[in-house]
Length: 464
Image 1 (cartoon, rainbow, N blue to C red):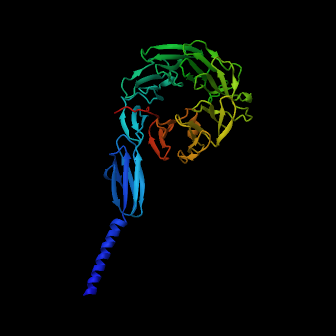
Image 2 (spheres, rainbow, N blue to C red):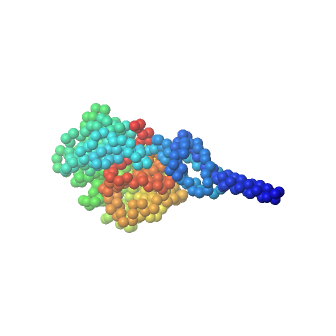
Image 3 (tube, rainbow, N blue to C red):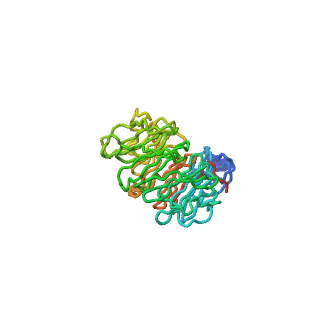
């Protein structure tokens, strides 16, 4: 009897130990927190509570999702292998918002792909251009019509107070309007009073009055123009890279319409790009000449057209034109693409060097010292401005066969833009009505279909 009793006790202890081992020693703890707190917690897509949250679970993998209104969702996978504690903690990112156009309607959409609301009523046709005012309170857009007789409109950022700024004027439709840096005026181009002439107009945002700045003769239907940082000067040049209509010149004029000057009267070639130095002290010219290769490259010019100085070295290859010149954040260097390589050079022309090979185009982070690279195979990379810290973000997310995108890329302008926090980048293929949102930290790609135009709302999105 004593032996039997001992055996029963042994079995009982063994069972208790087994249960203890099963329920305690083999179960782990998942501790979940977030900033801000009180966010919804989902484990394997089942709602279990709000942060901070803690639970014991058995061995296995668990999908954790943290969700809170107004913030990006956070997800993670936890692998429980024993009696251990696994911690999931996240600083939730505020949602950023997009302005998108689809089927003649404007939409405000969160960066997770959810439509927040439609902004105002439908328009007659899809706009061909959208942008925000410098203070983020107004949206400027252009409506196309036959024979390029377009109209320029403006509305509040919530879609209200929509107004036609140009009325019955013959807006060219190829040269999109610009806000002056202080946001008080808008500059646009219309057909001139006679054939082969174009007119620059300024619209006062307070009075809504239009005033002709200057009328110029132009053999090119399409021109590009830039306003100086102070708003006192306007650069413009004929743009005919696709039409190949012959040489183009770079012109500068006061924003009042006075002191019109041709900055390249003796040069025989094409103005690829022109802008002002960040401090407005000089003009940067990107020039290409097939007949005089020594002229091809970047130039610095004083605002009065004097002291024209070559920045980049002579290139013997006639196909080595310079594309996409951009100033570094401190304004001391210029980065550009040439012969499918990313180059860097000091603004005085010294220390010209290759930073990265096999580059189709690039974008500087507006706030940080980093570069977003777009490679020929449509993959995105991030590197530091000195060429270090290279990191691949995506694979060939457009597809190697998408040659149409590369063909239309420069014709319609670079389609990339950064979110205000620089965590995401937006790519729009207007001709295919596709928009991609790429997370530069996780590589996650969100594809939105049937949107022809898109841009980010300013840093502080409007409340709904």
